[in-house]
Amino acid sequence: MSATSSYEGTSQEKKYKGVRCRRWGKWVSEIRVPGSQERLWLGTYSTPEGAAMAHDVASYSLRGATSLRKLNFPSMLPPTARTDLSPRSIQKAASDAGMAMDARFITSREAALNNETLNISVDDYL
Image (cartoon, rainbow, N blue to C red):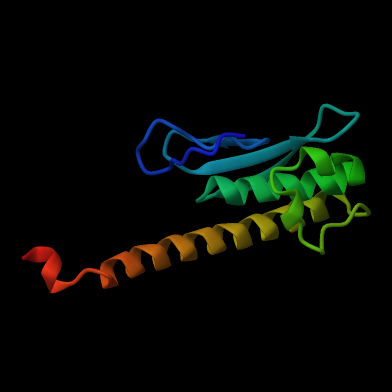
């Protein structure tokens, strides 16, 4: 996983398992169901972190504890992630977790931008 940043026009991208960026800048996630050709669509997100969290929840729900070493954010797996869910319930749990992560990253990005704006003084312009 790369630590470089990038959704605002740069060519570098964060690389998370199960995540890809659409040409128009949205991040999507899907996962293959073990033992079949079926894929579960996990949704479209504003941040790569949101899509990665959705993939983590689905991976854990499908594969159980054996997937923990391969998750994007193993220490952030929500307590609601369970292994006894139907495919439809896995999609919902993954989507909910991904959207929550999106909201967290968008809010923190906006707070950082507002904080930068507030830290400018008149002396900066003189």
